Length: 420
Ligand code: ZN
Ligand code: CA
View 1 (spheres, helix red, strand yellow):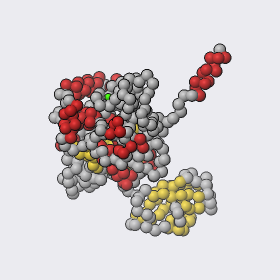
View 2 (cartoon, helix red, strand yellow):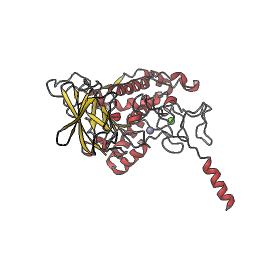
View 3 (cartoon, helix red, strand yellow):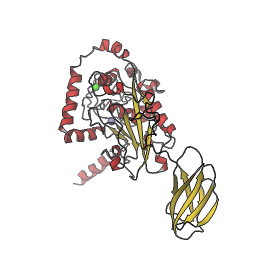
View 4 (cartoon, helix red, strand yellow):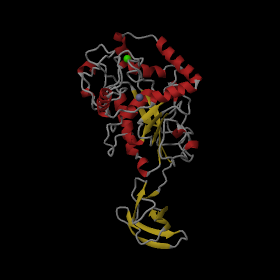
């Protein structure tokens, strides 16, 4: 018994503790398939149709994929925020679009790090992404929808996809790639639907702090590759190991793999008792593995083929080719998309406060005047002054509820706070 306990302790202490990319797509999708037999049928039919698709020989494949025209996918980003920091800037969104376009066009800066054994497999997928110019009603849009929510965090249960549950409804997923950026629970980086999902759920969900190239986020997921990976799923790519021990990803030119890789493996990554017969080992730098952002660099021609198959006649993503989302707005006179929440808003921290408050403002433009006034609930002005650096002392106030007002251009912004 003593020996057993000893062995147990030793074994526990040698379990790997490295953080692992947590993509919930497979778990999410299995739940969807189990709860919706019609979805399972649709998805299986699509997969079988793909198998019947005349296979191009390896020799022809190179020529075949090179001829594929570039597909442009219109994108709408739904930013759901509870705190001002979660209301990420347009620049942050642009940085993610930039990464997507580099990764799917093999224009990423880090292809030089692909081991020689795999360089000939790295391919330009001829897919690009553009923020929508026209919303579903034909009005002008930036392709970015901002919405304040009371919800503090989100799970892989699709609540962010519905206004009724504190999220934001999808734009017609036949014509837009919907990406929801929200404060997913810390254990999750993102998840996606595979093609065939119910239209109102179709799209990709990404945790706010891993969306785009983030200056404040120093984790292994700060290079925008979570979104590249999840959009890969949305375009029907599976994990390299097929989500089971030596499973199949339905792609011929990705080597079979026992399981996922994590961190930054060094070449060759060979797993004991692996199903991979190649001396070059796992293709751990493929975007559909679990390596850190800095160590993901490529898609293969087989993956490209599988993605492009979705855009053939009557295939699930063909409708995107007929989207009007990138055309000029046809409804120019109409008011802008009402859900676009760009109105200036003032936030107070901490709230309740004791000695000082910090005021924060969600607009890109700085406040035009740095003058504030504090009122009590009867509307009586109690304090006023100029604030510097957004910090105001409230030491002199008695405990109670107050309002602070600041001027921004022609507008007055008000926020409520409580003094303890
Ligand atoms: Zn995944
Ligand atoms: Ca494979």
